[in-house]
Length: 245
Image 1 (cartoon, rainbow, N blue to C red):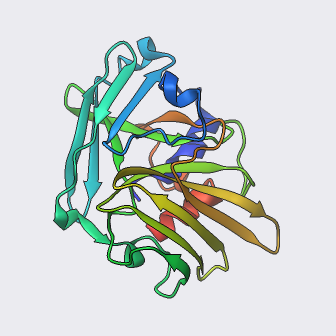
Image 2 (tube, rainbow, N blue to C red):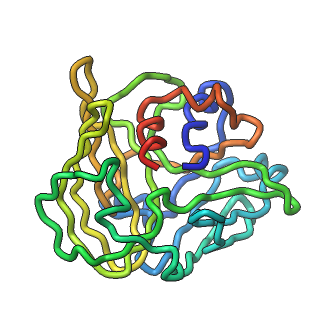
Image 3 (cartoon, one colour):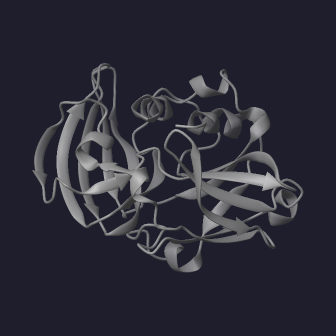
């Protein structure tokens, strides 16, 4: 994954600009923030400040090279993006794409032939006058706190599925971290939530669900100047997701 691990250290070091979801999304946290057709909107709370840094949001999938799947101007602190249907070459079998290991325990899968886009999800790169300036991420983490793991922390990603599918499974990575999957993907675009549900000295569990946001989700702008190795070590949940991707 590109630079997800930047984001907690950035939040601790800066007064980060946050982006709220659109009005309809914000009123119903049981919905994902994207429609199956790929419509996604956001409103930046300090758009006048960010306007000097961002004028365009470019959405890409990375399958060895970046492929643009959506683009939006930033106007008065707001963006409104329509993600395109990815080409078939950008899709992979769900059973091999989404798990951290090659031997997950699959309890139920309604259609094992379903193809999904890269599990990295869509990258939201920001530009000013065609110059790269940073990224947007969607998460609910406390911007004033650093921790190894904290129950309740969640981050969101966006993937495309060529057919509707339900999946229940679990997997354990080489570090002993347990992943519990309960996905119900629509045909089209979906929001995937990675959430730490248990964290103590003996066990860490991460749930992976779809189209069902927890409370407190917001968009966060991460300037490019704060992308770096030191930043990438700051949050354990983000490191876990990075290792999968």
